[in-house]
Image (tube, rainbow, N blue to C red; front, side, top):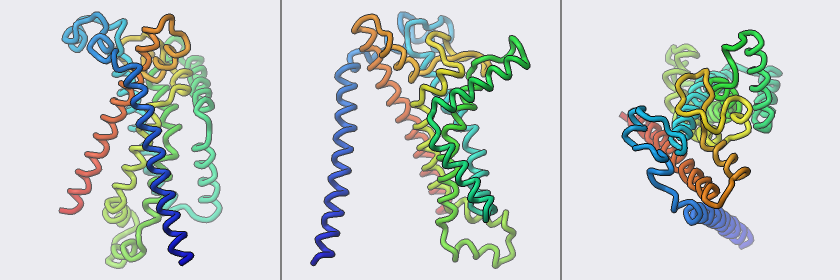
Length: 292
């Protein structure tokens, strides 16, 4: 009787927590829609420029959010593209090769890296920018590439830990099947272990996408500005939605500008949703191919 009551309490508490968090998220979304929904339209994205002229790069967008949207998308793709292969390799090493005191030291280092405030990562990226600018004067300064590199270090622990935990959770029977048939350790990892835990690894990549899309402190110190236009090179400054939201919320001149900040927050949610859906579709595609 006591055990059933305890299990019932756990179930009710879990459902209550789920409903509470869902209500908070719904409240935030409704609040953003109420404050910034009126600004959603072509003018918010393209400003006074014709959408066709802006998309065909005939005219530059000065008072719209198109450069910030494109800059955010390119930044996230670059950061995840850098962090994913490195984090995947590090997670494989942690799960399959590292042992003893080496594994303990590396685990502690990754935990410290995961717990570092983003402003510290930003300062490290800023220091790297100063170092490169000193070595190559007038060639490299705060830019999109430095921001992507710094942001990749911020999200890399998520990829490392998700890869490591996914590999370590594979049952021993499956882990030992290929080596028993003569496969090498590398062949076992590439053809047996990774395909079976790839959906879990992609889950870590999805979390990394969300972390990269919302951060402001890192990019604020490494290359983002308020008005840079569409990113034309990896070595130029750029615009991003998180920085725009921060900039408008702290220095708005009138209620209309603040309302545009809420509209930018909605666009950021939409952009993150598109990236999440794309990652989810990729995960489903990989799972279907594995089942064939």
